[in-house]
Length: 214
Length: 214
DNA sequence: GTCTATATCTAGATAGAC
DNA sequence: GTCTATCTAGATATAGAC
Image 1 (tube, rainbow over the protein chains, first blue to last red):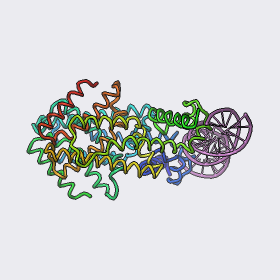
Image 2 (cartoon, each protein chain N blue to C red):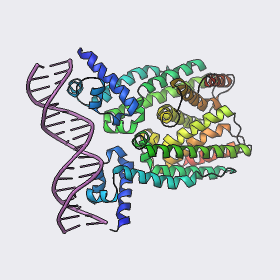
Image 3 (cartoon, chains in turn green, cyan, blue, purple):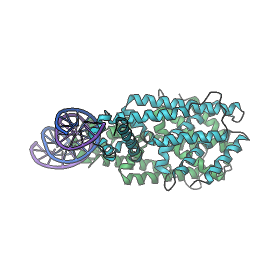
Image 4 (cartoon, protein in one colour):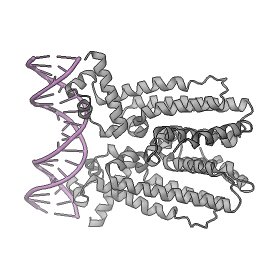
């Protein structure tokens, strides 16, 4: 094993175990065991368990940032938006342990706390831009106060859908169906404020996807 | 100190520390220290840290269950609903550590896992009954598919608003304002499906409360 | 780079005196 | 019921040989 490969192996093994069992339930010995390397070797590549978490977080951000980099003058079609949400939940799902133990992970590492808040803020901006785009097209009509509440609810669903689903929804559903529900849930928050033809367009899209789920 | 009092002291101290620092960050020694008793004394009253958590959970359920015991033929006014949500968030806030570390706490104790799911189910039922009450009055009009999505989003907000607020919202806000936002967020999910006069009634109520917040 | 062996540290939990 | 002292287990992390 060359340098990069073992490091990579440790990261992938950690990610799998963290996602499956929850980060607090996974020890460094456990990771080393699962990766078929010695604990000592693991600590040759990483100074601490936190280092592994931080590195995984960096990779998550690297993948997620481009997705929420919404240009200020964008005007997404329903299909584009669906696709964007799909990508977003896909990547969050790959790093779901971060969302599952958000409070404790960020609580232990102040740097992560700040980084996650910043990420949250960028995602909120992106959601705001998308709403603004719909408003510019005349597809969305909403009062400022309601807009703020909507944005808050959107961020709540975007942030906690994954732990919510893992805890209360998942039973007997394949990954695709769970994701479809997530996206449908998010869009359903916006649909009531849309005007036709966009409203019907978004609704039809949601119905179409949901039919194939479960 | 008589038997009941020390037990009570341990529970209250634990609850405070769990809520403030997060359950995983609080050790039994820490609890004993904060309660000004010895670790040995703590273990005279409780067999394990889990026992403390389970007892706190039971108390939470005992307080929360009556609130979500909505009669099947109920027809809540806007003010009643606001009050009910207020009570609900109040009690959840008092036991917020449960919601902050839901996955890990239930993951460690299968009994708690089941109990929490059952509680979630009863709360979902209650939310459904309230929607049904509004529908019966002709105040709410919604398609079955959208109703399901709405109920899902409602439960997500009801379950994760507290950790969400603690992580991303709280800064520089008093408890009352945070609560008001929570309730406003929940009601905002329903408002788009309401008809006048109820729609305007709910909207006005939300606006009135929000003005006094921040 | 990787291993084995081990050190360190801390949390949960117990024993036994009072 | 409460204390002090201590045990145990297990997790993080290091040392030193290969």
